[in-house]
Length: 152
Length: 153
Image (cartoon, rainbow over all chains, first blue to last red; front, side, top):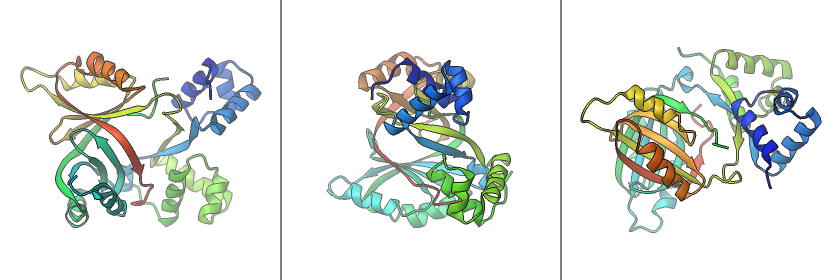
């Protein structure tokens, strides 16, 4: 889909505030509500807008700890990635699994209620995962910026 | 402050995590509540700050952003380094989506979304490496990603 300036403007406005009505959006973008609605429909149909999501404050739910594990796998085993990811997926506290190109192979986000809970997950679930040769952990102290805005 | 929620609230959160665009009526249908009851619970989750906003999900690749790089940044140990100066400057870079202060082998974790590798190189050289106090930087390029949806909730 070829996007024009108007589409980009709409996307920028939606990145700023995803909850505004078509009328507000149309007003800010300087177009009629009908045009605005049709353009958004088109962006959704083309998959440029994939949907909406809620932002959850996990601390309020009692999850105070977020640890990023950086894992190196034993690459002499051809199935190391598949087998590792398949097992890691089953740990409920693992929120994201990423494969990377760089010094580490896998990055995993583990969310836990507190350090004791994290330690349990780490010992009983993470260390039991196959093909690990090295693990490094980074613990989140504070989040200074977290946005999914693209520089469009 | 921790807010107490029950199993129905959890089911609502899981449903909304899968699709944040659902109406109160749709959410209610999925968790077995009437539209007004679902609406009241969603409202309560929003008012308590557990649902801390809604955002639009755009397809970065369709918009021409093909490269995601995670950076581990170590600040210089020599001289006086102001965390505030570093944080202010790094947050101002539009291509940096995530700035996290961490404990471990690095001081900060950054996520950079760029159009391609040469765009990333430009951001790294002109914007990141010139940040006040920046020392060692490690780059890991994202190849694939999967996110679990609300399994722990």
